[in-house]
Image 1 (cartoon, one colour):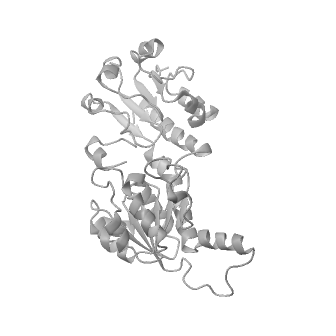
Image 2 (spheres, helix red, strand yellow):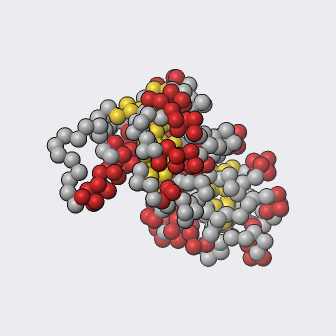
Image 3 (cartoon, helix red, strand yellow):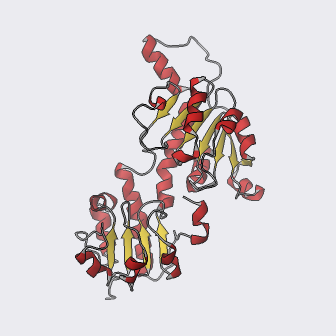
Length: 335
């Protein structure tokens, strides 16, 4: 029998049984030699340091300590990092790639619930569910009589900002619905947009013409406060802004001003800062729907992340190429 490669968990220890429930853990241990009782939350801890010297595969997740030169020096046999979560920016360093260590991420798996959440919010926003729910509660009666003009999803124009993994998954989920979907992304050309089945627009034109705008760009220096007071001013009256990407993409003070005017509505699963200060107006404004960063994988969804990395571990152990490798060259402009 071929000896299984040595692996080590590196994440917040309480996450291991959630991300790798019993059946998944059994499947993982069939292809790698890993001790679920030894989890690296601190690479300087003596038992962890000893294990690092033999580790060929790091199985990382939320809370993984930074992989700096000293850590990598202590792990001379390390050949792969399998990240059972989304972005690897928070713990990887250029030294990882300089040493030829393969990095794989479950970001694609994590995109699934974010896109599902966003689809739900788009359809609910198109029916003006949030405002009508509040009116119904206040009146204890229907807030309309007969046909209600101005709401509905038939032909509604939806703008997707960013052809990220989530953005692309969302575009797929939007296809069965009678919506007019447009995309703004400086790294997508007309041919690729056509393959995605959407019309490509400059960001300002998308903002001017869409009823619902959903943000799916990464947080970079280029996208910081991407939606500022000028761009919020471009949005048509009655439009809805949805943000499930990063809070820093939006100028919150400018957004609050537009919400107070009643001109726009917003669905915010991410904010800046996060969580919001207790006194933030976004908690109280009737046209702001704020959720606690729950669009991404939570609860039973995190096992999907573990499964994605178990499959990568199986590929490694059988000599196959990894399917979800992270390209350092595009890391700066991805999540």
